[in-house]
Length: 157
Image 1 (cartoon, one colour):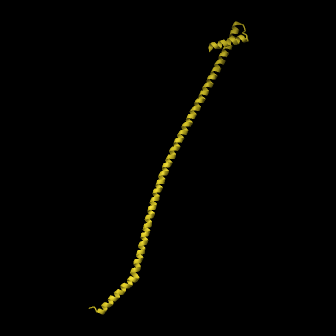
Image 2: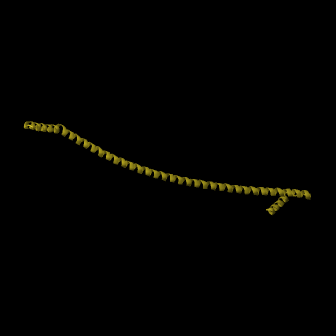
């Protein structure tokens, strides 16, 4: 059997061991674990805050990118519209200038035609008078020649 003195010594030793373990091991380890747990909680909280901030910045960047895309689309549409308007104005101006040049050319052509017609009639009348002089054998003076030429041109016109 166990002697009571040995038993009491074992209990005393056990209590001393418990005191020493608690004093030098359990309390420091428990304190270390609590500090470590606080550090982990703090870092976890900071990580969550940084994650929320990153998400917020990502959302802001997405919104900014979306708005920039919309603005770019608006600018492109405006530029295309202006380019179309400018092209239409340039085409209208080119058409107007072409019509004006064509009208001037037609007028010039009509004037030239009239000049050539008058010149041809004058030449034909002059030739006719010359032939008439030869056939009749009589000369027509300059004044009567001009008078006859004017009458003839009035009749031809």
